[in-house]
Length: 125
Image 1 (cartoon, rainbow, N blue to C red):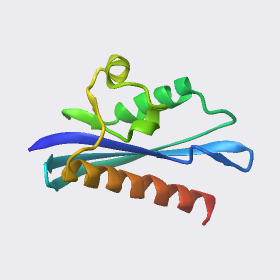
Image 2: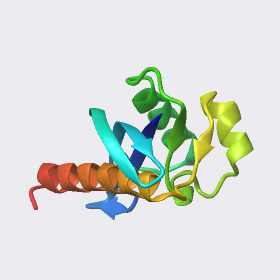
Image 3: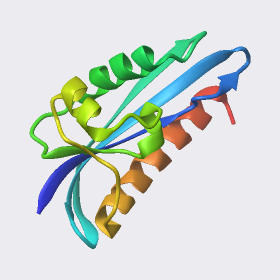
Image 4: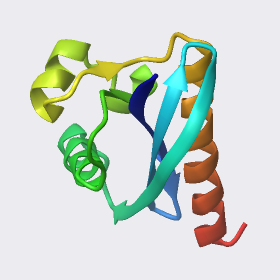
């Protein structure tokens, strides 16, 4: 079993003239074919007039700092504007993996549902 931090960002598009981003982090224990246990879920909410890579990276560092003791970070490739894994490793000091197995895809799916649902709740939809 592996413990991973699945992350997702919802709201990387304009909403009423600003970016209203909701980051979700889901700490899970997974096997290749399934999730075994969800250990922790946390959210970070940020609002700004721009969306620059440094903003996303700094906010993601803030989210990641809320979690301890995991093997790697799991996210969709587009979350970091398609930066390669080596560069992401140097930024976060953790291996960053893009989902391949069913268990990894399910973990990302949970993070996506958390970020999307919470963002919808906050904007009143």
